[in-house]
Structure formats: C-alpha cells, structure tokens
Amino acid sequence: MDNHSVQRISLVIPVYQGEHTLPTLIEELAQLTQQQSTQCGRHFVICEVLLVHDCGLDRSDKTIEVLSAQYPFVRPIWLSRNYGQHAATLAGMASATGDWVVTIDEDGQQNPADIGSMLDSALNSSLQLVYAQPTNPPPHGWLRNILSRGAKEISARMLGNRSIGRFNSFRLVNGEIARTLAAYCGNGVYLDVGLFWITGRIGHCPVRLRNELGRPSGYSYFKLFGHFWNLILTTGTRPLRLITVMGFFSIILAVAIAAYALYGKFYGQVPVQGWTSLLIVVAFFSGSILTALGVIAEYLAVTMGIVMGKPLYVVSSKPTRPAVRQ
Image (cartoon, rainbow, N blue to C red; front, side, top):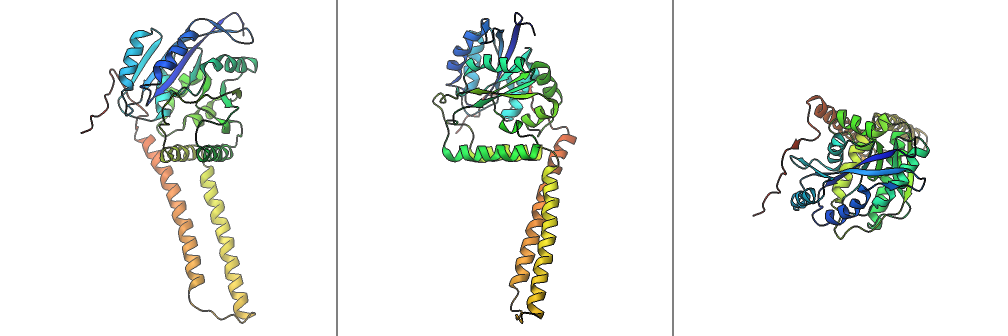
C-alpha cells in the first residue's frame, strides 16, 4: 500500500462508566485527529471517535453530550438500554466510516499512541486484524489476572486457534470486515469469535498498559464469568463433543467399577455391605447427565434467541437517562 496515502481510522469506545475518564481520554485523542506518521513512515489520522453510550450507572450521557459539542470529531451513539460491551462495540463498528476501526476501552489503560504501531503491524504483514499484546500485567488483582489467562487458554483450545486466544479489547480491524461483522452478527455471539469466523490474517502488536484513570473496573467476577461462558457457547460444537467424550469415559468407568466389584465378590471373598458403591455410581452418572442436559439447554437458548430475532442492540435518537434512585 502506498505510504503516502493517509489511512483514516475510526475509533470506537463503548461507554459504561466514563463520566470522569472520557474528558482526559478525548483530550489525548484530539492530538491524533491531525495527520500523524508511524515509525515506518505511513500517514494516518483519526477521522472520528464514536462514543457508544451503553447506559451505565453514572452520568456518562452528560459527559458525551459536552464532548460532542466541544469536539467536532466526536460522534455519540445512544443505545436504548445496557446491552454489554461487545454489543456496544458492534454498534460503533456499524456506524464507522474509516479504512480501519480501532476499539479501545474508556478507562485509559490502553495508550492511543500505540495505534501507529498496530497500523504498521497490519500493513507490514497484510493483516486484517491486529490485537494489542500487553507486555506487562493488567492493572488488576493477581486473582483476576490468573483467571483471565486461564479463560483465554481454554478459549484458544476451544477455537482450535492459539493465536486468537490472546485477544484484547484494544484491536485494529479492517474497516470493511468490521462493518460486515456488525451487519450480520447475531445476538449472543461473542465479538472475538465473530471476528475469527471472517478473518484469516490475525496478528499481535506489543504494547504497554497504563494504570486506569482513577475508577474501579466495571466488571465483577460474575460478569466476567458471563462473558467467558458466552465465549464458550459461541465457539462452535466443541463443548458438545466434550460431553460425548465425558459420556464415553463414564461408560468405561462404570464397566471398570462393575468388573472390580465382581472380582472382589467371587475371588476376593469381599462381602457386599450397604449401598455405598451404588450411591456413588448413581450420583456420578446423574451429575454427568444433568451437566450434559444443561449445556445442551444453553445451546438451545442461544439458538432460540437467534431464531426469535432478538436484537443485539437498538440505537435511539437521544440518550437514555439512568434511573433515579429513591
């Protein structure tokens, strides 16, 4: 690609608790709305910043209104209710007009100055999708970081692709791919799984995370587990195959237990006392059956939501105000 052409970048920021962090972040981004050069000499500019209001608990709506009036490059997108980070990100992608779409969090731990390096990574290797790869641990507790690494390792195995397992909310996506995904991605589909479906050239760019801009994370462990479970359900049929494998090994275990009991009865002169072994076998197989039925039911619930046409998000013409607490 011609190094003298200017790459237009749309920046998408899903906003949930950005009342106090957004002004600092937008002021930082304002410098990148003027033509910049990457280390490889390529020219780029942030042509728009899409603030997607996901109806959080604070007054982010007021902050977005002030910023959109102050900065001409800021475009607000108002969702009718809280749909979650991935749905809000897709809503921003659907409205993006740039050659590339960058997604970034509102808390300031991801440095916009790294966008140039990510763009070089994409153009040098003809990549369609570039994830930021942190070189330092995220500014969270040790337990959350360990669980996050474990969840990404499991997702990599479920997807059968270890590279996408190192996904991050700071990503640079080809503009056409981002808009195409936003156009057809259904409710319940994990964003990075959807990107995996339609991208073949994925890379990573080393970045250094910063401390968050003075606010706690909006994600509880319960919400993070919900994201992880949604990721598992949308990776395909591998979890169902896991149930099949579990059932196969359960049969082998049952045969082994029966053979051991018969051997002890006829050759070891072991008296049969009580129903302990029976209770263990019944409890084990009952748990296996209920687990299998639960996972299948989750798949049916996701399928039902898609068939019924449940919208991934709804955009409104004005901000949805947070409920007033009595």
